[in-house]
Length: 147
Image (tube, rainbow, N blue to C red; front, side, top):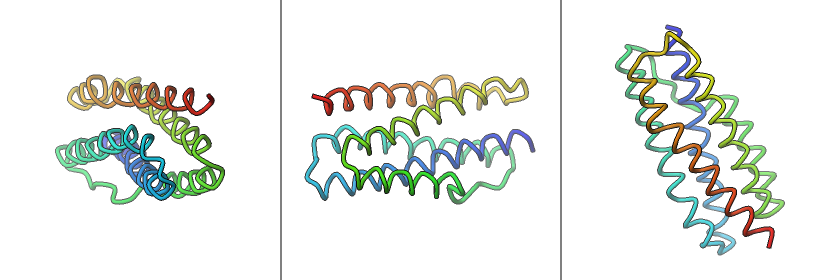
C-alpha cells in the first residue's frame, strides 16, 4: 500500500505538470510566443508519458490510480495563472520551480528502500533524467529571456 501511495503522489505531480504546461502553452500561443512553445511542447509530452508510465505501475501493483492532480494541481494552476499574467519570464520561472519540486520528489522516492525495483528503475532511467533535462531547458529559456 505504501508503494502505491508513493507512486500516486508522483502521478499527481505529473498530472499537475501536464495541466500547468497546457495552460502555459495556451497562453504562449495566444501571445504568439511560439519559440518558447516549441521548447515547452516536448516537456509537456514527457509529462504525459510519465503519467502513463506511473499509471501502469499503480495498476501492476493492484492499486487505484489517482484521477486528478488534487491540491497540488490546484495550487500549481493558481501560481501559474498569476505568473501568466505577469508575463513569459514569470511563467517560465514558475515552471522551473515546479520541475525542481518534481525532481526533489523523485529523489525522495528513491530513498525508500521498499520502492519496487521496476519503479526505481523507471525513476532512475527515465523520469528523473527527464525532469533534470526539463530544468536545463527552462534555465536556457530563462537566460534567453533575461537578455
